[in-house]
Length: 112
Length: 113
Figure 1 (tube, rainbow over the protein chains, first blue to last red):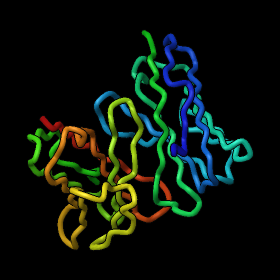
Figure 2 (cartoon, chains in turn yellow, blue; figure 1 turned 30 degrees about the vertical axis):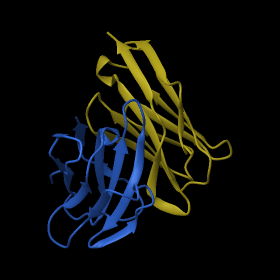
Figure 3 (cartoon, one colour; figure 1 turned 120 degrees about the horizontal axis):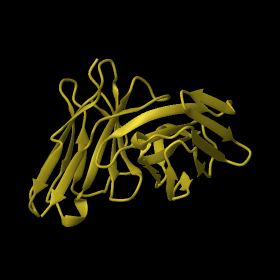
């Protein structure tokens, strides 16, 4: 079964607004990663947050992790049209750290 | 330092033919992973290899699919006697160790006609 589930499935916002995507998972993890995928392209690694971390920042990205709720959020501030893409969270399982389990993604559209 | 290189980027095969997908990991990375992505879905783990060893193939279909990562050369994902349901994007990732960041290639989009 899916380890990570993103919500919402699709999000449409105006350029300059913030975008928040959520991810829930089921089992204990070592770390959680967020990836971006432009249409028909490969995955770009955005950020990794470890299970003992609660928040991490990278440029306009802010990721939070709540292991008690088994959930994470990705916030993109001051969005740009170029942020239009699908965003996936990926978790590893504590007992098989090499295997990334992806959710089905959030499709973000940033309107210029 | 080149990223993970996959080729070909696009592959068209007729039903019953064989598909061979290649992946060269990043320099210094000895861990390779293959994932499959169906349209509008996330990636699904297929297999994890280290040099000359298959560590975990729990996500691979039992028949027609095989993977290798020889001592020299790229990792190969081989699909024999392809069927329409094999049409998907196949992504390879590599990492320097078991944990941490995995770097993905651009993928091979297989279309079975």
